[in-house]
Amino acid sequence: MTHFKLYNSVADLPESWDELLVNDIFLKTPFLKALEASSPTNISSYFLAVFSSEKLVGIAIIQRVEMYLDDVFRKTSNQFFKRCGKILISKIVKGNALIVGNLMHTGQHGLYFNSDALSQDEFLNTISEGIKALTKTIREQFNKKIRIIGYKDYFEDDPIHQSASFFQSEKLYKAQVQPNMIFDVRDDWKTLDNYISSFNKKYRRRYKTARKKNATITHKELNLDEVKQSSDRLYELYECVSDNAGVNSFKLHKDHFYNLKLQLNDNFKLFGYFLEDRLVGFYTLVLNHNKLETYFLGYDQALQHQHQMYLNMLFDMASFGINHEYNEVIFARTAMEIKSSVGAKPHNMHIYLKHTNNVIANTVLKLVVKYANPIREWDERHPFK
Image 1 (tube, one colour):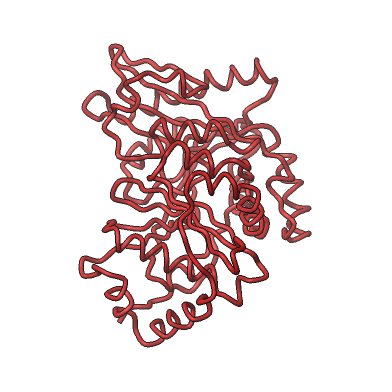
Image 2 (cartoon, helix red, strand yellow):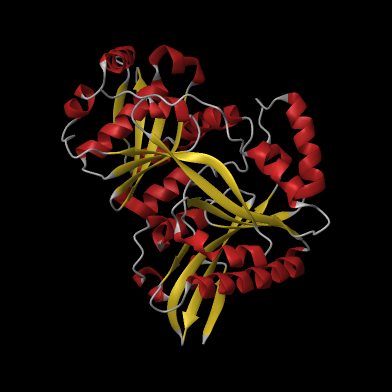
């Protein structure tokens, strides 16, 4: 018999959680502990375990998201769209959402099941039952109504799309979101020089110019103590980039990077950029088995153009992937054009979601999705010979 259990603390998870054969660090307890200790104020994580005859056969991360206007709209938000967006959110999204997956990172990092023990449809139906139970609990404990239910981020070839009948019966519609930019590490790239030599003239010259502009900046990895000592400055630099996004659904906790380093150890890397011993930028990486996942970054906006810091960070992340023999570097979504200029390719992604009020048509909800995560027109770059 298949059944589920819901947990709201990593400490309560069954010991068998980490024994499941899933190669995704974002589903393992060290990452989940860091997330639990330093989630954004408007995000709470719940953990669903699926059992078959008392054996753990599947897991899901479900995040409760409270839509606070000050978190969604930043200083740089366009004022007209900000006003329209506030109306949409107050009328349609006001309340809570339940998202199956990790809202803070691009990609499918919310589900795993043992296909030898149960079918995908069985697994998804059990998750649906878990969501109903969690919706009731949130209503009783917090007097909050769940307005939106969503499943995020799936590539076009993800097996989950084979369960179209499940999503139809649950009245969840499929929507395309911005692509995930993925950098495939070629077999003939054994060193950074191999990678640079594969550029055509224009992009080889661009690489040299970027490195020259960044010559006065030093680059080093920070250890746990250094991350802790630099927490305030790291957060300040993160905010410089986050606030510039215009629209976002959360703000990181100030201790997020420290907690990730504490829990993941060498599987979490934070590299700082220093100008005359002052921290002026940083980027982070999560070592996820054969995939290198780029995470959050930050930089001093006043120095960004002069030193081409963002472009240099992309080169440094690609270099790390090549030197440490990763199969691919996950650059995530946003800034697609500049990421394509270093060799990343777009991979389309989809989400499934619905509004729990049947009076509000999904066509209206689609407007919210389009506003919050628009599919932008952009020119893909082709840097290689």
